[in-house]
Length: 311
Ligand code: KMH
Ligand code: ZN
Image 1 (tube, helix red, strand yellow):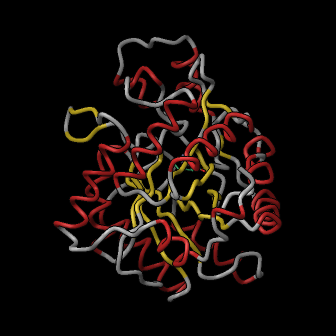
Image 2: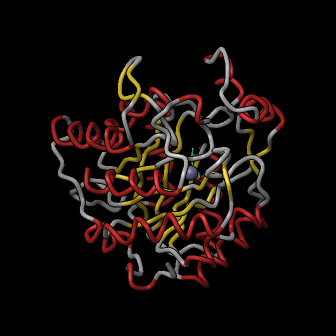
């Protein structure tokens, strides 16, 4: 692993997994997402991972105009690194999902490393009723949802990233995805050092278990040596236990309402900044590490800089 003393915290603001009924604190409108992003950056996040939602319905949206409003709104108030999604949501085509990269030419964006089942339907059981008509169907439809990321899709994604000077963050939901990353590295379609996100606990991917995180880490060490760095996403209630394990292993971490709505058992997080503050405190008190600044993060990841983006 390529090491950095300080921890890079990513804040994932809203995503496309949770629906508004699940938390009144889930940001929906561009203004809410921007406000949460700025507060998360002030709390210590140097990377802000953004999805967009329809301001009226709250449904996940691929509208480039919404992404531009959110990205430029966050950039106007912080030097944090804005990282748009290319994963989007269940209802989007690959073309729709990738549109933000040539539109915004961001410093970094997510890049999902394989096709998989992506089940959100188990969340249905946790809620008696939903405030918005689309919500229960959106979750239930994930029974038959295939999160498409074929080798051909990834090839065209990486070509677009390269054209835009955008560094891909490789979202690996299972060990096989690490081997796919190795394949594209060997073909020269990926530039080392790689930035890898170990995505733990998505229904259809690897479980959010400590030994599985160690397995992902050991496999990455074997495949990439010091030509990579990693960050950890623990879905749901495993966000902080796996986050602490990840930063204790020398890695980095992602927190946020995209991945987890709770600050503690039965305690809804008040905001994304609320989750970042808790992770900052745990990183310092448990792992004894400091928090990386956006500038340190840019240099460590080899990003093109905020002046080279198109928003
Ligand atoms: N939804 C997360 C589990 C993306 O946006 O491209 C991973 C993610 C993927 O954030
Ligand atoms: Zn995402």
